Amino acid sequence: MSTTAEFFFKYHGLGNDFIVLDCRQSGTDIDAEFSRWVCDRRRGVGADGVLSLLPSQTGMARMVVHNADGSIAEMCGNGLRCAVKYLVDHSGEKPERIEVETGAGLLSCTPVYGVDGVAEVEISMGPARLVASNLPSGASGQPFLDAPVPGHSGLRGHAISMGNPHLVLLDQPLGDASRLGPELERHPGFPERTNVEFVRVDKDGLTVVVWERGCGLTEACGTGACAAAAAAVIAKRLPADAWLRVTLPGGDLHIRVPSDLSDVRLRGPVSFVFTGVVPDLPGR
Ligand SMILES: N[C@@H](CCC[C@H](N)C(=O)O)C(=O)O
Image (cartoon, rainbow, N blue to C red):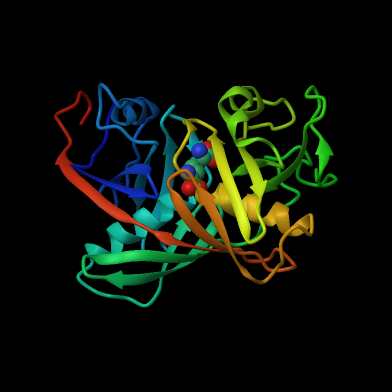
């Protein structure tokens, strides 16, 4: 179990909480064992995931997302807002825009400032992909849209990648998330497991509960909100090119999906919680 970072910083976006580790000096990422320990809510600090910030040639940092179970995710929308707040609030500057390298590409982030530094961030999340190696479509197959979910009679879903994989279930009771989530996370159609969104389509937006790959039910999921909004737009249940409210257990995000799905925008709040010293660990 190891990290080269001396301090950790805890942040949350709508209750989706993360430990930020600044590893830009050493360039050394953490291992899965460290992530499992520090995320443990009884034996560690407690979080849904760890965001390690590594050196980047193209952005202010490269963000690696470690889930609470030690697995690595390609992207995290709420986590990226936390990383932006850390990077900007510790830079001594107030940039209009910063870029961060992620598994979903180099993403442009616009901080909105409040009395305590960055209060909100708007992110250009890149495309909602319907064909991807981490979806049932594979890298070159047919999109899986409003399709029956094999092995689950009566269940239909949209498979969408925001860098990370999502199975969006429109009109699925939100209360089904803890019952169906664990099995659907490991549905054999998704080669790298999947996040699962249980979605109610309202007149003016969506209400969503997310079962997240690698950490279970969370208070909010940024990429999940983007995937749910993209599915609702594809299904023509909500308009493209409009800011949509997505209500999650932890609060509201705002998402805009262009009609060609080329660049989904996400806007939401971010908060600093506390900082601490990483204890002396074997291997540090
Ligand atoms: N909560 C995140 C997504 C974190 C990664 C996810 N669990 C995965 O494995 O893909 C978000 O806000 O997007």
